[in-house]
Each structure stands twice: as structure tokens, then as C-alpha cells.
Length: 524
Image 1: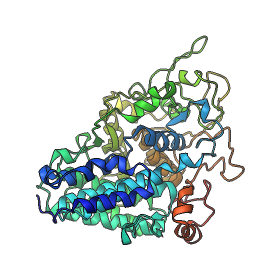
Image 2: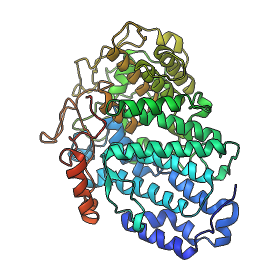
Image 3: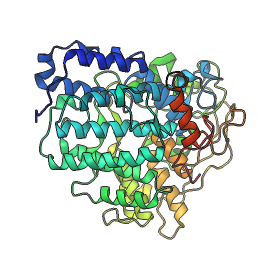
């Protein structure tokens, strides 16, 4: 298991760290332990590779509370229908009303992208170990697929050429096709070395179990294949069928879920409880669906609201895209149930089952099951994951629909109906109805993966979300279609000006703003 190249001299390590630091002012802080280590220390217990792998893992779903807030809560949470801003200091500069400031929209690019790509490059320059390289490739794709889903075209294939991150951009089509090829390579390499588990100290997801990384890679391959189903249907079908029918397979049980064990406090807890009494609250979108379905998972996901007076308390979310009420009032809405020691979700068995349900609905071979069977299994897996009872009764409900939203403060109610979709799968229903069912239940089961929820909303139009009350984009963003992507950071226009200009003109197919669609968002 320890077949390395000669470890890079310390001087070279310091050179790389200092060079990549030009792309993010915090990079040295995150890597000083690596550059300060002696060569003997780096060789001991795979120290060098361990640090690179752990650094990459910490940026897929950011463990840093500040980065997590901007990417998972304020961006993904709002646009994905899971969370709503509750700090009135965010008014007139937030994602949810479509006027974020540059320091809000730059985080996924300047932090997640640079940290993952730099550490991936370091590792590939330090090792020939097929297991370490395969796992690193999977982590990279897991993280960078989220970045391209946020911005569209980004630098990818030429990052690291000539020793720099300020590289030419690839189209999102090129990126997706390359990511699928890289996943194929990682799956092939790890399958050939499936019994060669590695140090648990290098792996906060699966404690070094290679077979579980293969299952995650196949599951991620299925997710990415589905994302491009409407723009590259033949390639999507081919790759989805390969993933679903691989001899080791996909994540299929909750024991195989990709959860990250944290070294420090869960960042969602910091954002939801410690920042200013809680900078976010649960969104009215998800409580409206789950209240309408009388979903037993509510008590696992949410706290009860704490309004006083004549209000009947329950699971009451705060509408997103509003002028946030004065300090203290928004904190009375339901909050996320999250403890300091909870793990961070990357991907679960329920999502994979719903992906297979959509594949089967499209007529693809997902392993022999029907769309209805995979759909019902997805619900059951989610209930099991959350230790909730009543899955069988829930999935047979053919009457309940999402409820209208009545705001306890009386200011933000939405009395229209976003959706009439019921839970019970209907084999006689038209394709679009069952697609809405599948995506809606996948959305509920994927909580709180906001970037994934937003991506699927842009791809399919589901779940049907409550429109914002305050669209401050000046016409850039359609209130009905909602935000489509983020602009590139201003730093790119300073440090990588020609390449970003080329990307906008050649690949983006529209202005560099929140209202322009990315490549795979063809349907909605």
C-alpha cells in the first residue's frame, strides 16, 4: 500500500503552497502543518497523503463554519428550498432576493475550488498509489461538480498546467464529460485494488474501506449522469446503466451512506444557533410540503416554532426572499435539529434509490427494478436513516398534498398552491407527474444538501417552490424561474481576466449574472 514516488522535497512543498496562496488569502493557514513537517514526519503513517486527503474532504461540504454559511445555508439553503435568512442585517445584499455582494458569491470559487484543486494536484505529484489517487479523484469530482453546478464553466482540465490555478476555462459540457471519464478511471483502479483498505486516519468518510469508495463513485456517477439526461441523453443512459449495474454497485443501504465525521463542531449548528442567535431558519417551502404530507420525519429534521400569543405552534418555516423582520422575530420560526457532533452528509442511499427510480422511469436499466419499486425503497431508506416510523403508511398516501403557507406574523403568507402532487406512486400517471413525485421525495430525503436541491430544481423544475416576495434583481432574474447560477468573483476579472472573458463569450451563452442558465438546465 505504500508505493510512493520520492516524497517531494520540503522546498517544493513550500513553493506550491506559496504559489497557490495567490488564489486565496487563507491557503497558507490551512496548509502550514504540511509545509512545516519534516520529511521523516511526512513519511510516517502516510502523513503527507493523509493531510492532502483530509484537506480535500473538508471542502466538499465545507467544515469551516463561515464557508458553510455562505455556500450551504445562504446560497444552497435559500435557492434549494431548505433554509431562509433570519438575520435582518442581510437585507438588501443576500442571495434570496437576488442581490448578493461579491464576498457572498465568491466563496465556492475562491475557497472550495482552490482548496480542492490545489490539494488534489499536490497529492498527484506525491504518489503513484492507485488507491490514494482513485479516492482523491472521487473527492475532487464530488466537490468540483458542485462548483460547476453553481457557476457553469470553470477552469478544470488545464488547472495545474504551468503550475497555476489561473487557467483557461472549460465548458460545462467538457467538464461533465471529463468528470465521468475520471470516475470511470477511479472505479476501475479501485475495483482492481478493492481489498487494499488504507489508513482510517486518512479518511473521515469510510475509514479507509475501499469497497465503500467504489460504491460512492458509482453513486456519484449516477447523479452526474442524471444531471445531463436532457442535454446528452445517450451518454447519460450509458453511464447511468454502467453505474447501476457495476459488479460492486452503488450505495444501497444506510450503512454505506457517505457521512463525514468532523474533527470540530458541526458548521450547521454554528450557523443555525451560534451566529447572532441563528442567521438562518427552516424554509417555509419544506415545512409546507412536509406538513401537508403529515411527514413523520419532521420531528427529526426541525424544532417546533416558538411564537407566543394566539399562534398555534408547530413546524413553521420562514418564507425565503422577503424583507427579513427585525431582530428576534425571525428566530421564532422552526430551526434545524442539529447537534455539535452530528456528521455531515455527502450522499445517501435514499438519493441513489430515487436516481434509479428516475432512470427506470426513463426506460433505463437500473438493475432490474421498476420506477415504483425504487421510489418506494427510497422513501423507506430515508425513514430508516432518520429512525422515523410509518414509511409504509406514508408512501401509500394518495390524498395529501402540500399545504398553503400561513405566516404566523401575517406578513409573508402564500395562499397559492405550488403543487398538487401526492405521495403514492401511480403507475398510470403521465411521465411528468411521476417525475415530480420522484424529485419531490428525493428533495425531502436529501435535506440539508441545498446545492444538490437547487441543481435538481433548475434541471427539472421540481419541487415547486414558493416565489420570492422581494425580487431585487432589476429584471435580471425571473421570479418564476428563480436564480439560475452565480456570477464569477470579481477576483477572477482581476487575476484571470482573459480566461474568464473567453468563458463568458464562448461558453456561458448569456451575460455573467444570476439569471443566465447553465448548460444542463435545459428543461425548466
